[in-house]
Amino acid sequence: MHAASDLLFRTLGDPTRRALFERLARAETLTVHALTERSGVSQPAVSKHLGVLRRAGLVEARPAGRETHYRARPQGLAPLLGWMERYAAFWEGRFDALEDLLKRMDQ
Amino acid sequence: MTDIAAEAALDTLVVERDLPHPPEKIWRALTNSALIADWLMPNDFAPEPGRKFAFRAQPMPQWDGVVDGEVLEVEPPVRLAYRWDTGADPASGLRTIVTFTLTPVAGGTRVRMEQAGFRPGQEFNLKGARFGWERMLGDLERVAGTLADGGPGQ
Image 1: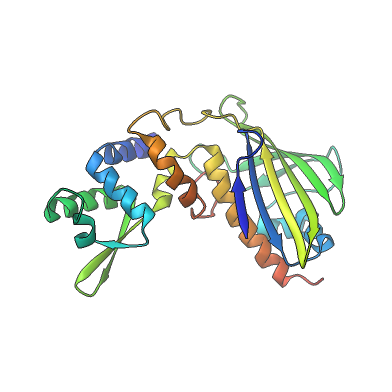
Image 2: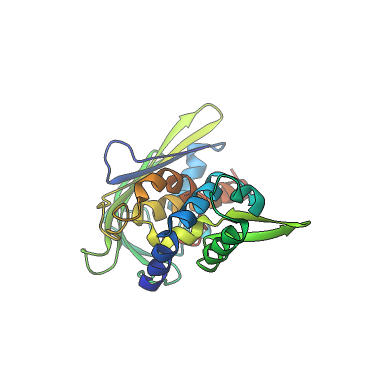
């Protein structure tokens, strides 16, 4: 757990990487091209940062045609979240399961 | 629809959802051991005040998978409250109270889950302290809702 949070802090400790992750967290998916615009760094540098984010489990990549689409993996942040954040996600999932059960139950 | 809010007190998590089912049916899902196992966790729950029980999930890092419970309040089909404790050590574990409240609304029932007793900063004091995390917290709150639902210890 501590190793996991150390890796996350090292990964997000870099301001460029953090900015890339924040942009992805706000968007659905973005390509390297879109991410390079307004980032102030070169495309190879963006690609390299995306690789680091990917290895930390914070970003996932999906090839679509010639481009690769990147998306944030919020669950990668789980080791940094406190109990309340974890439980918020937990109860959301359990409420989904409750709804599903109610559909299957007789009146 | 869902509304997550940490309202009233910072130590309380509230999750609320309107479900198209009558309160009596939802009450069964909240209080019948086999039904609880279907949507929440395996358990030996019984809706009797004072009853001690446990939820058991897969062990995870920093959590042995056990929630110790004690039934505090049973008012069918309106209000159910139980203790939700984790970990033998109160310094690192949770000492919370979960309360379900069912309110009839048009077309169904509003289910409100309150989990009270969180102590801020109990687990990771790092949060917010480094790297300008404050800026990200708004996003985190939003994305936390999309986390995998395998368990809170993930």
